[in-house]
Every structure is written in structure tokens, then in C-alpha cells.
Length: 618
Image (cartoon, rainbow, N blue to C red; front, side):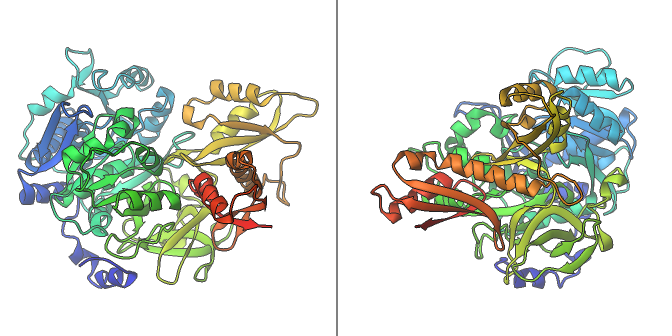
């Protein structure tokens, strides 16, 4: 059935979950896909973006066989069922064999290979990793130097190298040894029950201390159905996946779920959307591969829409799918107006095995909302106390904490200390986001209750920025927040209160951050000294006031071109009962322009922000 409304979802849930989902684990998902679609293309890997670039097609049968070979390879080198296998892999076919092979025979731990070696080693130690699968410099040059540093930090690690030629002492050649393994049966069968641990994904900020969310086989099997349900597209659908495989969007919605449904997943080069050529030749990729569903985070979508489409046949496109951060409504409207393909926005988390809500392709898509809850996942808007106590349910339209519960929700973090404040009573997960639900069940995000900064889908822990600046001799205290940005959604900025009598310029403090913060994405774009840090009644820094100030600065700067055109306009940003935060532009002098023209210009300048705006005239 096509899902159009919340009533359709409730009708699906009348069938018990055990009857609805026949496959119980990753192995069964791949086996069933191989049985149904055998010689169809499961993965299409593009070594480059041009029409003459090398293309490698992997069919469903080959995918299953190579995944089993990988599982047997790991087992043959002593990797046990409870051992953790870390992956430092860009997007190449071997990444999927390694990810799912490790899940079948052990526990997979995909890690962001752009992190510093010390951060990666910290995540691996937290996970208790026994093995590492990493790409040779011939695939991506930046990974292997980090591997050498990691080997020094974890001496007993078994290391598998993907790609390259020649022997490396103490390193196992992944490709040749995998090919020598049996691909029709498992040497050692791990019990794969629905609650069996399949993977550990790091979350809660890719900077700072790792939080490892546990993924189970049963939740992955459920996700493989729910995350494609809202599309109701047939086998043979082609999904263009430019996301990295250490991210749930890339490896779960972008790979496991579509492959389980018989779709073809197109992987555009090892770096995906991080490769500027992928964005530059996006429409050519769509045309040559007859892409049905285009997927990207909002920042990439915005960049793609600035690429000329003339001369390309993109009639195969039926939809775009996005998530990771809220999509500006004006961007959605532009895509649907110019391309004619609907934008399906959803809301997901690592802790919920990817998407938990989504707008329906065949029903009403409410731009600005993240859609309806997916089957068998409850979504609740609640008033939650500082101690994690759920005090009451919020009324329709009232803003509160977005809570989720159900079999797709993680059973918790590897370190139970991280469960505090997140895993609440009766199995509810506090997402850390604020939102509301309308009368028809659509979820609208309005802000965050936690301090996490999300830069283009990339999580940044503000503590890392604050701790760095607190080491500066002139800084008394620091507070990092997200600065609204029309491209990245938000970028990190930081407010500082200097010590009495101390002096330091903003640029001096930014340069200090560049040296002290190991990840470039976390370096603040602005450092703003303020006389006194706003605090609560008990003396804690009051970040909501700083977030409003940051938004005020962003909107004020964005209006500069309007003022240069002779229009006098002031902007104020404040709390709003419906939208969470609302920017109000007050025009006091039109400079000869009509109100309609000024309103259109404001939309051009401000429509890319996630925060809503209104225009008033004096």
C-alpha cells in the first residue's frame, strides 16, 4: 500500500512486527536480495565523474558472496563473534563487503577517516577494536599515514589493507585473501538474533569524546523496510548515494535499505559529495545512470542547484531525499519548481538506525516539516525536566522535547554513562531536539535542547571549542554556539569573556583555535569578545541568549545588500511559539521599491536560513 497519511501507518502497525518483517538480520537481508534479484546491479561504483570514467557493477549475487568471503577472512584471522572491527574506508565496493561481513561474523565500527589519528585511536580503544580495515593510499592518500600512528597506539591490532600492491610487513592484504575464501557458506556462524549487536557507530559530535551507539541486527532489518517505505518504488530503482559510509545516511538509508529492496546504489567516486567533481557533474551522473532518487545533505543540495542543467536529460528523477539538518523551505520550493521532482525530507539519528520520520512521496509533503513517524516507531513531544523526568505530553502544536521509542531505537550506548539524559524511562530516547507535532501527525523541528552544532550534517561538540579557548591565558570563559548559515545550516562561533585586564583580538583567538582544535570543521568562524557572559539564576552560561544573538548577527549581515539598495531595514530575532525562533525584518524606508519587491528580495537573501522570517513595514 502507498503511505499517504498517519492513518496508513497505523493500519500497517495492526500487523505484529514479527509477522511484518521476515528477515531478522543483515545476512538474511542480503541472502533474500540475492535470491530475488540475483544478476541485477546492486552497487555501481564510479571511479570518476566523466562519461569515460571506469565503472564497476556488482550484482546482488556477487555482493552476497563477497560479503561472506569477508566474514570468513576475518574469522580465519582469529576475529571472534564479539570482537570489534574498525573501518577506515571511503566509498568503494570493498567498504560494503567489509561493513556487512564484519556485522555478520563480528561487530563493525565504521569511523570518520577525516578525524585525526589520535581521535580515531580514542574511538577504537573505547570500542575495544581488535582489527582494522583501511584503504591504501592508491584509493585515498590521507588514511594510511593515520593507520601507522594507530598501529603504534594499539600494537596488537590486526590490520587489513584494501587496495595497493606489494606486501606491507604485519599487514594482511584484504583483496587477495578475501578472494581465496569460501563465498557460499560461513566457516563459523554467529547467532544473529534480532538483539545481536551488529555495529558501533560513533555519534554525539565527531569532535570530542566518542559516544558509541549500539546497532542491532533486528533494528537494521526493520530499518531496511521503513526507510524505503515512503517511496513505494519498484526494484530497479536507482539511488545516487554521495554520502560517506561511516554515516548512517550513507550506509543504512543509502545502501543497506535500498539493496534489500532490489534497488541499485550508485557510488560516485570514493569521496562522494566531498569530491567537487561530483557536485560539478551531478546532472551528468543523473543522466548517464538514469538516477531515480537523488540524495544529499541540504548543503550539497544547495550547491548542486547552482550547477547548470542545460543539455542534460534528467527525466528519470522521481525524487530527492535529504536530512541531516533542517532544509530551508525556499530551497525545497526552488528544487520542486525548477526540477519538478519532489523533495522528501526526513529526520534521522544514529541512535534510531537512520530515519525515524519522513514525508510521504505519494501523500502531502509539508515543506519545513520532517514528515510523519515511520511504522513501529513512536514519536512523542514532551515536557522533560533537567533531570530527564518526563513530566507530561505537550499539546498539539506545543514545542517540547522530541522523544522516540520502538524496536528501531538503539538499546543504548556502549558506555552506559552516556545513557544518562538520553535514554529516559520506559524506553524513551530523548533526541536532544525540540519540536512540535501538528494535528495530522507531521513533526516540525524548532531547535535543540542540547548544545550540539550541526555543520552541513557534521556534528561538532561545542565543548571542544570551549576547552581550547579556555587554555588561552586571556580567556576567562568561552561558550560556543551555532551561527546560522545559508549554506551549511550553521557554523561554529564562540563568545568569550576575557580575564580582567587582559586583551586579545578576535583574530588572535581564532588563530589560537586553529592550532588547538584538531578538526578543521570545528574551528569557529567568529570569536566574539563580550563584556559579561549571560548566565542563569544558578550561574550557568545561558546559551539560548547567545544563540539568539548569533542569529541576529547572521540575519543582520545577510541584509547588507538590501540596505545597499537604499532600503532601511532592521531585523530582530526572538523566540516564537510556533517556529521556536523567528526573525522579523522591519522595513522603515522602502527606498523607492515596492513592498512586493522588497519581500521578494528578503526571501532571496534570507530564504536559505533554517530559521523562518517575516517582513513587516512601518
